[in-house]
Length: 74
Image (tube, rainbow, N blue to C red):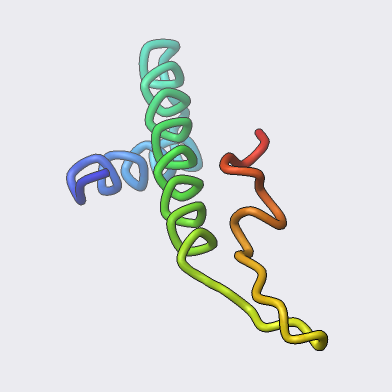
């Protein structure tokens, strides 16, 4: 997600608090929020997939496989 979209989310949030949003703006805000959350989940998945921990018994466990099975739940 690029900075322009993040700036738009913030602008809509400020407008919602001050004067309110039109129906079209609420739909845009909701769509942008869903996209933002999807981006965060994708980044988290990537981080988890790259972390391996060594267990007490010496075995190595990948956190992405242990806690996500390859995908994050909604």
